[in-house]
Amino acid sequence: QRSLHGDCDHPGIAATLQKLGDLTAQSGDPKQGIKFLQESLKMQRSLHGDCDHPGIAATLHKLGDLTAQSGDLKQGMQFFQESLRMQRSLHGDSDHLGIAITLHKLGDVAILRGDSKQGIKFLQE
Image 1 (cartoon, rainbow, N blue to C red):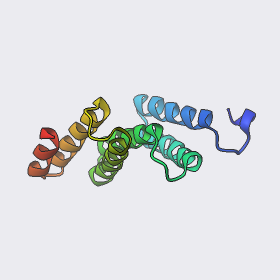
Image 2 (cartoon, rainbow, N blue to C red; image 1 turned 60 degrees about the vertical axis):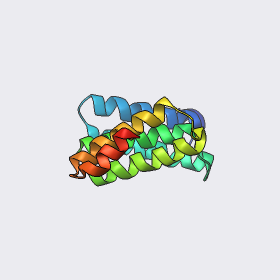
Image 3 (cartoon, rainbow, N blue to C red; image 1 turned 90 degrees about the horizontal axis):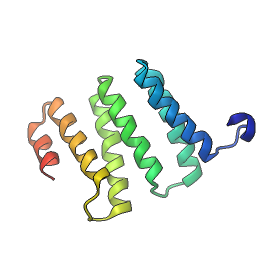
Image 4 (cartoon, one colour; image 1 turned 135 degrees about the vertical axis):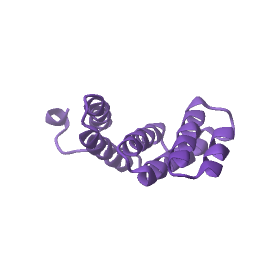
C-alpha cells in the first residue's frame, strides 16, 4: 500500500494497519498490535478530521480491547468510552449491536477496575 501511495494518508493503508494490529495481537504480540492500531487511528483521524466515523469508532473499540487485555484498564476504558460516544453520535438512540457490545465491554472493564456499581450500570444499559 505504501509503495502505491507514498507517505500520504490513505484509507487503504489505514485498513491494512488495522488488520496488521488485529493479526499481530492474535499472534501473541499485543503491544505491537496496539502500535499498529494507534497508527491506523492517527491516519483515520487525519483523513476524517473531527467527524465521527464508523471506522474510527471500530478502531477505538479494538484499542480498548487490547489495552484492557494488556492490563491498562484505565486506558482501555477511555478508548471504549470514546468509541461509545462516537457510535451513539452515528446511530442515535436506536438499538445497535456495536453500541451493545461496547457497553458490555465497558461493564466488564469497570468491574475489573473494582467499580461494580458502574459496571452493572453499563451492563444494564
